[in-house]
Image (cartoon, rainbow, N blue to C red; front, side, top):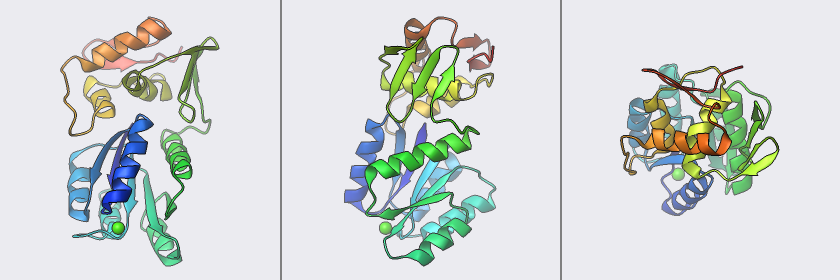
Amino acid sequence: MRLLLVEDDAMIGEAVLQVLRAEHYAVDWVRDGAMADAALLGEHYDLVLLDLGLPKRDGLEVLRALRARRATVPVLVATARDAVGDRIAGLDAGADDYVVKPYDIDELLARIRALLRRSAGRGEPVFEHKGVSLNPATREATVQGQPVSLSAREWAVLEPLLARPGAVLSRAQLEEKLYSWKDDISSNAVEVYIHGVRKKLGADLIQTVRGLGYVVPKE
Ligand code: CA
């Protein structure tokens, strides 16, 4: 899953970035509203963590512009503790949820998982399909009940496929889930990680759709 972190405070930004990356999210971090606009216009994200008080362009303006473009990406707004008005304004401008600064990092992560779940049209917190299960909260993967150790990038390509069995994702779409701007992309990276998943979870779990991409078949 690929996240955009919009935060002008260097210490908070650095800390949140590290935690999110440790949770295996691909994260781009921008520090002002204009950069946030540019990132949201140019890239596809699965979720945005948006600070409201930002240089160059206020977070609420960024959010309103995003929704005016009819973008449906989930937005989690971060506001100051006593700013009830900010929270209401944020939700009414199109935010999906909020966290209060200074936020508890575990609560932040749980809210991110909940939003990702809802935006994928799912209610259940664990992905289960044909004997394979992935638990995003604990990062545990099992096949037929047996724990399997997946690398962060194997997880990153498998999760979006397992989240929507039957949906074909192109190599480019899976690459987006893998990398932040600063990472190098080798041309066969997706194939390499798909290969790793197949070795660990079974050759049939992910099928190649020639010319289109990859799919976890429904049946
Ligand atoms: Ca700020």
